[in-house]
Length: 134
Figure (cartoon, one colour):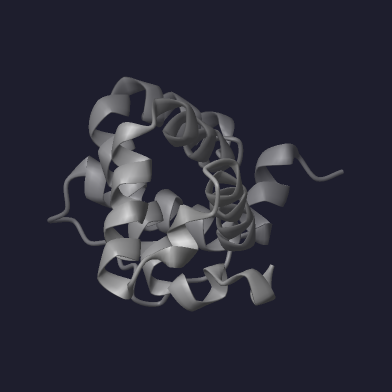
């Protein structure tokens, strides 16, 4: 019988560019071994959560030009703590118990890395945020 942890790790996509080496800090290792694969795995859910955020905020996002949309994503994640915590939950819920233990030891620095990755993922998928892709 497979354990929850082995199932979670088995579902994660491989990211060839997310390399680990002995010269990396523990935070960098966690970012490349856990945060990046989990964020990629959760990509569709992150996009759906952002689309829902936009709808709850009267679809203002869709009236903005590209540069302002990128700023909107940045501000939503930086300033709206409720939304930010929701995004963190989407990622943290995919951690193994060991990863969660690592996370809680340095959650502040890892939260920053996590949100930076989520911001970049949303920005790089900005075309998929259009209503016709929902």
